[in-house]
Image 1 (cartoon, one colour):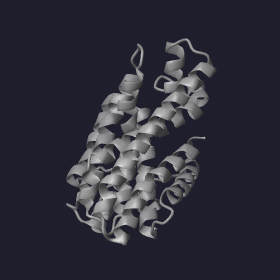
Image 2: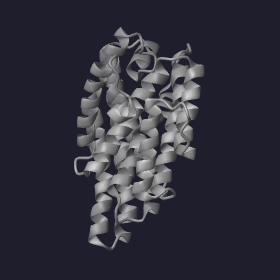
Image 3: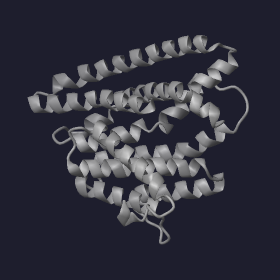
Image 4: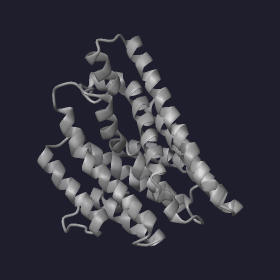
Length: 281
């Protein structure tokens, strides 16, 4: 990260701890990844974490400008002349992934689109946190599944893992349902474990445990019972779609190596969920 100028005397101590944690996080998410995957995965998370904080702690006008500049990096390969260190990280990540799989490879375009959807969701997420009124779980899931970052993370994983399979497999809509329910599970888990911290920091508005508890006048135990049911439903839906994907594709993959790579991709959702949930504690 030194070469991008992201570290300076003011933030060095703060970011060193963050970078160390993210480095361990990446090794747990992609335990069988090569060295290049570790580097690119770390760049991806460093950019995502710092960028999210940048949008969260500044005015909307500034946030929209930064989001548009970030989108142009992945959509157009455009780096502004006055690029920030964070934007240089994103530009290098985009170029390195292009070198790895090709500029117009379907997996590369899938990753770009997923990251752009993530960017587009940042401002609505921040804006809705400022609004009064009740929240619903449906609205929460629709917003949070993008904000949690499961889709771009999986899209990056596909680039790292897929070496034999036809990339068209990943374009099947069943994968979207699997990603959505994985994101919902991680979001709920994060909310339960971060509730007290967000309450202290007065940032609890979009925490599902908080708004369901206060809107329904529930005790902590009543809200925990509700969350248990939500977890059960999300996991049930997750396993339904996991089985549907296996039933659809495994029979048409005649080669043992192709089947093994396919199972590795499906199982990778379990790895992402487990690592994300452990990191929330």
